Length: 316
Image (cartoon, rainbow, N blue to C red; front, side):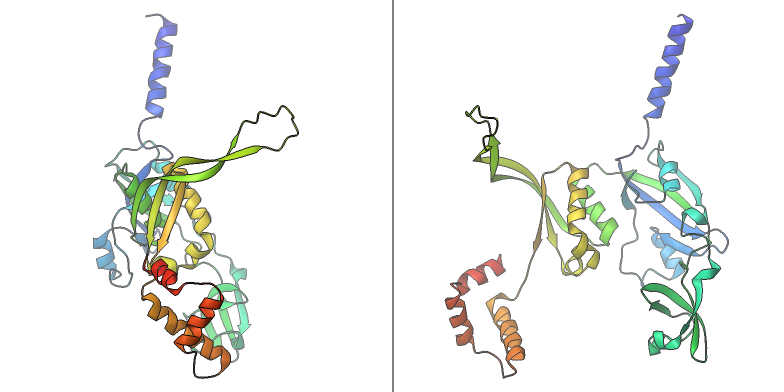
């Protein structure tokens, strides 16, 4: 073998080594425990034994188990993701996140004196978490009519150490979707995939040679790969979900290579529950004793709304 051939072979072997192990875009099950370096204060963990030792297994309404992340998507600190690239399932290790890259350096100027009148009465004591002029902070001391409030992040100035173990890879698409939702919202939801036939307007080639002619469309039946999500009350009331569901859906479509996401919300109670709510609302608006069912039915008839259709929609 010539020197050039040996060099080419070495380059090929090096290239193969570069693409082995975990890569960006992989769905990874990660076990980890994060603590501050100096005080060893627990920051986060997926380990049920650690949670039990720290006495937090009953305080937090969550399952302590490996967390699903998508490598390269910023679901963990950059240093942790860099540490994971190229690793294999079963590998374990430790990585330290400097304070400046974790929760920031501690800033003495972020400790400010404010009037106690800006604090709720039940929060005018050291250790209370408060919001002042839109900023979150913790009360350090209260003296007379003034309070010292620390607006630094509680972990500002702390280096964070992550002990990790790669528990596995996720290949099943439903498990991938569930993992993403659990990571973002800490909820377990029923999800499934279906291929739906949907009618939509599709642009077709025009027989008109005029370049300025309006584009032509026709209705065609196309297949759409769909992720269905059965939303529970916990998700429905989550503010992050309410204001960011469009972005979340885009992430799901991107990572799962699907066409659309359909979220199903079930409202129970039937027509009676709806009528009770409408009656109470109308009574409050009118200042009287509430609307009679006959008045509601008459109003629905005038609006050309069939009450049976509403009840059927609710039951669905």
